[in-house]
Image 1 (spheres, rainbow, N blue to C red):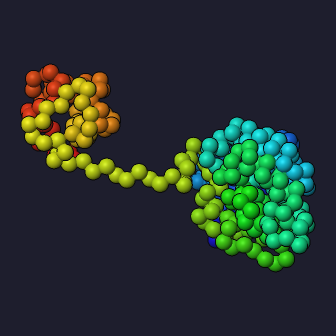
Image 2 (image 1 turned 135 degrees about the horizontal axis):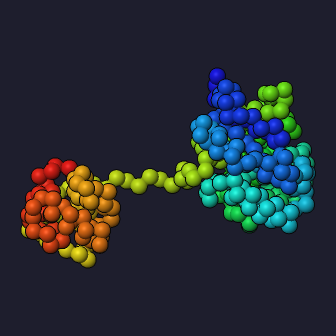
Image 3 (image 1 turned 90 degrees about the horizontal axis):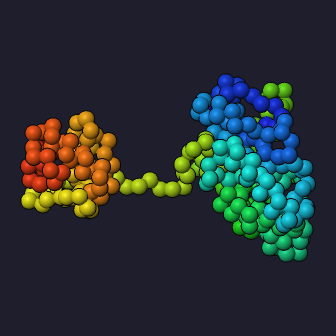
Length: 299
């Protein structure tokens, strides 16, 4: 089956059911209704099966017409609940705008003005938890206008009230009207796997927007022969020493951190290495210690 995303409220399918449907992520809720809400054990069970989660906030469908104060209150409430569920500190919450939002300003092209109080509601979310953590669920017009107005970073669109249009560029998923489990689970088509990766998460998952650190190249040339390293030294030569010690496989030496600082851990590791190799145990990494490490050929 083609990979899909699902969302649901009071009905809670098992991880096995989600796997059988081909679901790679599940959208759930935080709200004032405990029966509707996601639970930490459920999220953990999905994560164990390789299924990510993301969270909507919705109490009443048209709550967003109450504007900025409502958005501020809802964002703070939703974030506290989401944190208790294990949501990572980078992950967004999706404010559900689950009604047909009218064009509040037909004579203006300003997308924020067209959203009227709904735009102010989303601004309340941005002011409370930051734009990078705000997503929006709603119609084509709600999603595209919120993105254009800078009031959201992510969107999940529904076909409802969308006039047959879909924003295939800025939305992660499109809720297309299909359902599973006798109508209790909504199906969402993945429109942007990249965007989905930015809204869906597992507990403890690192921020996918953070670029990986480039690998550190360590060579013996960075610790020239004749250079003695002692407690308190720092730099690339110390990193070479630590890397070689860490790769030696010797008890009491392996596992040392290669942070470029010759501290107490490195001093102990050098002494242990010298003892095992029948060298003078002085904790000073000179020519003999360097030669013995280099002979191991472990970097």
